[in-house]
Image (cartoon, rainbow, N blue to C red; front, side, top):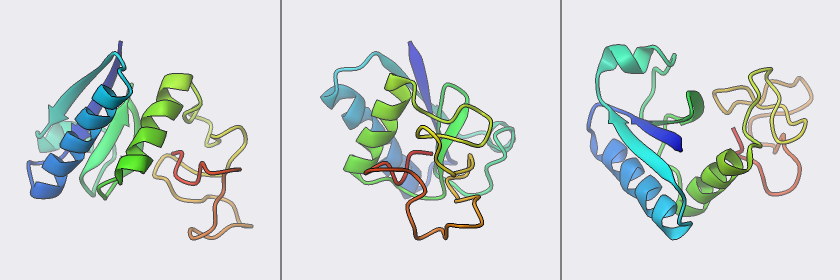
Amino acid sequence: MKTIKILGTGCPNCKRTEAIMEAVVQQLNLDFKIEKVEDIQEIMKYNVMSTPAIVIDDVVVLKGGVPSLSDAKEIVENANSGSSCSGDGSCCGGGHHDHEGSCNSESHTKEESCCSGSESNCC
């Protein structure tokens, strides 16, 4: 079973993120466990300075914002299919996002999609 952790101290955006992720897991009928992490020391262990953040199986997949329902579905589907970041800075089959979701390639700006197809927020 995969684990989704919602990192945040309990603000409205953190609660909204948790609700969105719960809805996605239910809609996709997936066997994911959702945990809320509110302890600031635990949040800091993930190098997260901006909440809410989403961690799937100990990999930060989103931080500093509330995902749309479609973005949340994409995040969960990527995690479920095993196409999330591999830890080497590449994701989406050769994209250029780092683990903060930022483009880490000199040839791309944050506004451009670093990943192919519709997977612009894959990390």
